[in-house]
Length: 123
Picture 1: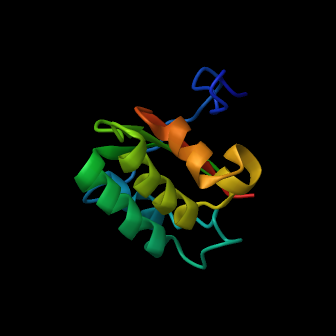
Picture 2 (picture 1 turned 90 degrees about the vertical axis):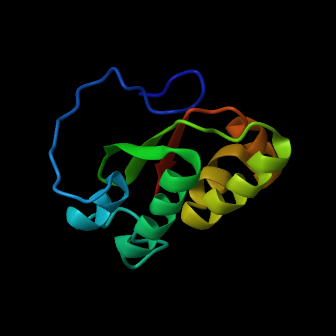
């Protein structure tokens, strides 16, 4: 189920899981997540990116699915220039957000400007 912004809705049924991790970014490695197998051979590389976003932007893991990751963002990109840089990082993290979503990094950056929730799916 998606909301009007194209993100998966948080109103559907979900399960709660507890994961022992030193920070939310470590969640994917700790659970052995393999949902990004089409692009990344291990979740460890994604965890490095998640840690960076956590430190710089206050982005924390909200939900993990079979091939999805949702983040809450405390300090989103405030303008187009900052959003372009973040959009390029998102492209490296999850190309499907651009290829099967916005269509271009510049369009995706417009969608990211001020966004407090990021959703990724690995197709």
